[in-house]
Image 1 (cartoon, rainbow, N blue to C red):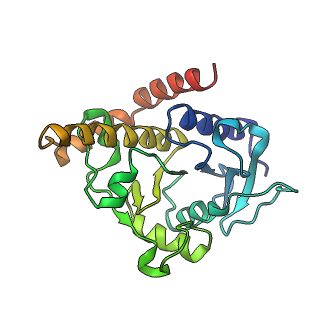
Image 2: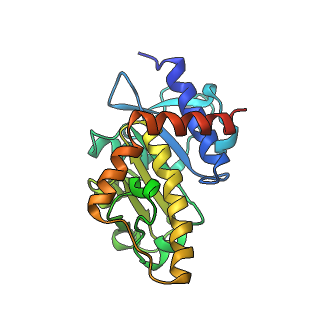
Length: 235
């Protein structure tokens, strides 16, 4: 069954939001699991996120085959999405980005931890995946299902994994949840770095992270942020 116009529109809007908020530039991508077929996902063909429209969204099988691509070129790293959906039935949306504020933490091994209540959604522990460990020196792009599955294993049951010298993957049960997490991951990286210049950050405790996450991911929190980000990205 083809995805609904609303599902296609939301994927396009998510791309525009992430571009407007500076999480992605000309690179990076966001997908959602097909609402009627868990063995498929919806992802744009290879366009810059700020340009994506609903008509650009393509249906893919988990192994990366585009069902209605035509002559359009797919993202080379679409395997990230399929491998995570394959391994994580709880995941409804996947984001891959190269946020410049996050990269220093992905490259140094300095733990990225929540320093503000709205950033609790990033979780207590963020693993760091290194493509070199299994695939050696390369261009760092995840372009095969073997690489995608290895990254999915590195992500494990977490909401975020940093990709060393590359970027990160962010997941959520819904598209709105994943977008919120990606935006506040970048915010937290910026704030944590600023706090580290001033002294030792006073991080959220595990109990606080759980409570803050519940608040942020409640319908009130998700609806408020999604509406505001949509207005800014799609005036």
